[in-house]
Image 1 (cartoon, rainbow, N blue to C red):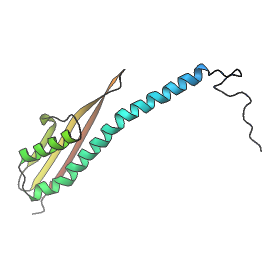
Image 2: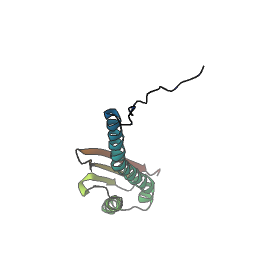
Image 3: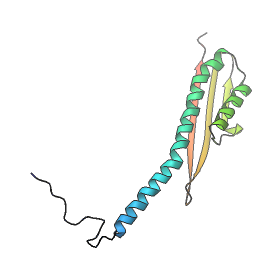
Length: 130
């Protein structure tokens, strides 16, 4: 079976003019690419913050790091990653046998015509076996 291309292209007329459908399609692709370039870095930075909290929680437990120091470390890492995490967004519960960390924040992303509010909730807990 032989596949034939249509004699008339979808987006170009016989005189060589681009159709309105083609312009809309290209505008849509441009808008999706723009939104992706703005939103994807926020998700990547959130993943890095989540990974930091999960990998550091066992260390904080074994070293008996105070809750205020843990909070400052998380806020410092969030600032390094350019995430809008504030002191009230970080909850730390720390005692001799357990460290629990929760980070709950909103990251606004300006898309020029609309601002998307991305909501992230990351948490990690580690318990001593003693």
